[in-house]
Length: 263
Image (tube, rainbow, N blue to C red):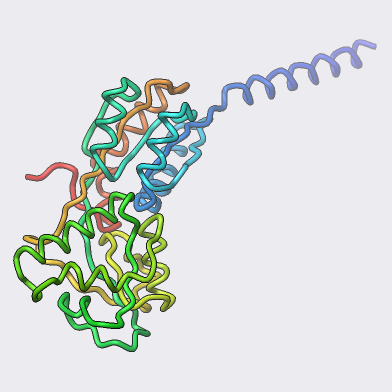
């Protein structure tokens, strides 16, 4: 009888410990611009390994879409945007705190290796019949690509009405740059404008790149902040700190980004 009671007590204790352990687990919700996906997933694995009991649930989409979700009350702990104006908008509404420059990125032209049109330089983007794919103008990177074209047009770098001719070649506008890069890689377009970080290793045998001169390029500054309505403040601060640390910055550098702080 005593043995049976001891067994029952042991089972109850184990059950109690299991429930207690489960209750201590937490999920940190991180919303981030699509172009940050590879870097954030890598950083997330490091964070989860260093913080047992904390899991990160990532939500990758265009920055403006994610900002809208936060404004509508979506449960988000940390937000990383490819557009600092979106962070300012949320800060003005007192929705976020801890705004910091996270990393930087710049534009590059990608060309499909299966293209039937000869594309040797930026001037060739204006060629009649070229199939150009860009991110939509409502997406930060889509606006940056159009800013590059305007700057090139004003500088008369590649002929008269360069901006008009290039934009006239658009055959598709995508919700994010990953989709642009993928479509070019699969030959659904001849050329596109993406971030340097979007040209991943698995695409190197499908596309080639054409650099955009620094004086015409548009540097995208990414920002990160903690959402004030977050439910895991300590974990949010810890992940925020990891990304800004030398370890986090090394991950971004490896994936084609530029340092958060210029020397």
